Amino acid sequence: MSIANIKDVARHAKVSPGTVSNALSGKRPVSAKTQQRIIDSIATLGYHPDTLAQGLVNGHSRIFGVVTNHLDDYGTSQVLMGIDEQAVANGYSILLTVVHNTASMNYSQMLTQFISHRVSGIIWAVPELWNVDQVNLAQYGNRLPPTVFVLMQPTSGLSVVNYNIMDGTAKAVQHLISQGRKRIAHIAGPNTWDSQQRTVLWRKTLSDAGLPCDDSYLAQSDWSVQAGEKAMRTLLNHHPDLDAVLACNDNNAIGALKVLRGMNRQVPHEVAVLGYDNIPASAYAVPALSTISLPFAELGRAAVRQLSALIETAGDASKPAPADTLLPVDLVLRESSLT
Image 1: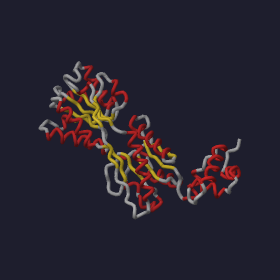
Image 2: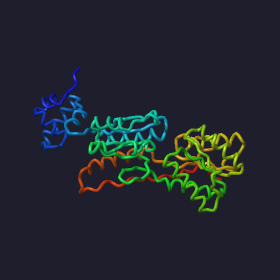
Image 3: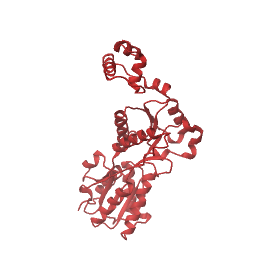
Image 4: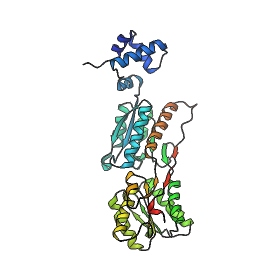
């Protein structure tokens, strides 16, 4: 069975192919009666516009280029889901590029691929891999489409979507202090901007409260459960009497819970534990894990909305560029931190 094309739709609706094109693009007015006849013909024939071909004609497509990595990570997958949901709602498709090997990442090749597909915009969802010095943006001139960065350090000239890191970390530490905790350790994540900000806020909040926050209360980690176990052992070796730990994510917190359970340390009575992310497993940990809930899917949706606004204002000096987006977070309290 052959695939219907625009000429088939025109023949079925008894109009010219140009009229069908105008009805789809909105470039020229089409009467309501004709518009409905074309819509009915499209539904009957199962016609789908060739967005890539339209991009060749119009200079851009209804496609967003999306860069991501770690698809097995809960937060990353939720951000991507939000991007896809909102893109579809806005009438766009996504062209996904997954970074598997950061050491051999080729910025120029990736951006050139997006440009060759005439994407309308780019969502860069791996901010720790963006290095402007290596990208050499000047070589693309005005060919580089509008770009939004998810979880990027706020930077002049870049459009950024973030969650409220300061509010989340401050809420977490202040909660632990309110529960009477005085020796609060921190399992810090990898060397990314948002992870660094959490450590800065952990230290500042404890310092303002007159509580210890030197490096002996800090253990570096990655995002895994195993790394959380290792970090918890390190912290207990330095401070056997610590009475709380703020982990960089829920996986690390679950690893910490396992170590504490193995050492017969009672949670939360002896040691309170608080995570970050609010992954589904956090509610089923033993005990159930208190955590900062991050709006992962909404970050993705907000990135699409912000990119759509950027596209609308591009090249129009009379329209101000959309402001950066800062999403709120929630403190979810469960058994692991409540005494």
